[in-house]
Length: 126
Image 1: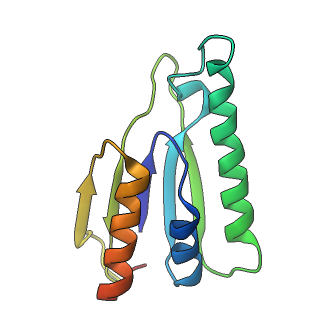
Image 2: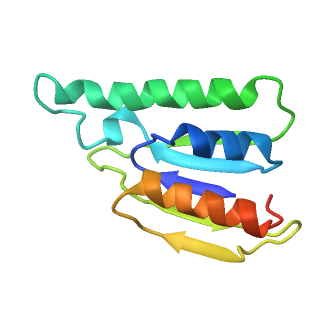
């Protein structure tokens, strides 16, 4: 499974589904400098660091006692921001995804829908 989001804030229910199932997960999110709030005002400038803290918690959750693969990557290119959103699902031992969903205006609810879809239809995902 591959996930991409500019703002990493997966709900606990999604984290639980990903943790309990045997998925290999590659995730891409924005680095603090690639977050559109990076040079924000008095309060907004701290938002990218809150997302960085969410990254830390997610890594801690997945690395704790787990043998499955969970890799988190940050996108950063000088002068650019990162807003890509999508999910790519793969059958075991396949190179190309069998399900692709790109874009969303509300990624957290979107991911919840996809996770429920995956859980109840019992896709075999790496």
